Length: 266
Image (cartoon, rainbow, N blue to C red; front, side, top):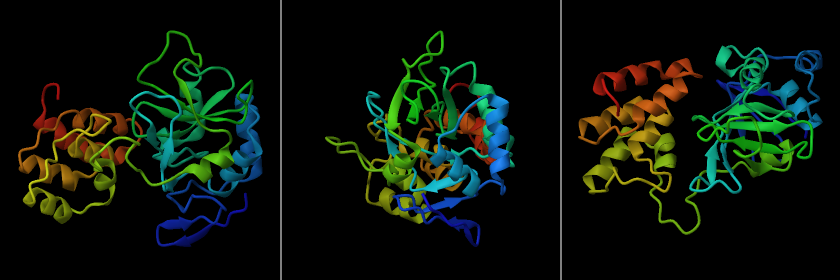
């Protein structure tokens, strides 16, 4: 899994032979010794492809960021918001902090490796029957004791994860509005054009989320303000903003704005 880290503005280009195009906001440069230290501290043995990824990139935001979740009803795709890194500048995105936090919640042999923008986690199984597999841990349905009951397959290995990352597409069989894509890519003028054409931006997609909720998930205060000004209900936008605020301080302005609109439950 060869890669090269080169800087172009604030983006670092990735040259893995995979679907992964780029990594933004990678973590601080580390050595193999730092990875060894993490393994010793938590008594884990990380798969070699993931070790190489840490040594090369040490976390960051991937592009594209969408993956398929096998067997999770009503949620066949997920978005990988950020790979955790060792000593990442934001504590809530530091790999060591997340391993420590999720230890009581995950089965033995499973560690979190990436945030999803919600309560779920992208995880890696380093030991046991599913060794090497990349998994989705559903934080919305936690069993009383850690087990694989709320864990679903994403890819058979970390290398395969990088190969299957793709742009978001509607689930097969659904005539879905592309709210998730629009919330990331569209400008306020693009959204204004849709409104002027009479497009119903309050129609839920197959995830039961509207455009304003996806805009909150992706920290698009500009789109949220525009949609609120046009009278669209915020629904669960505040809840999504606050979930992300637990990990990413940059959501604070959006969360404060939505709290002022929604002093009670959204």
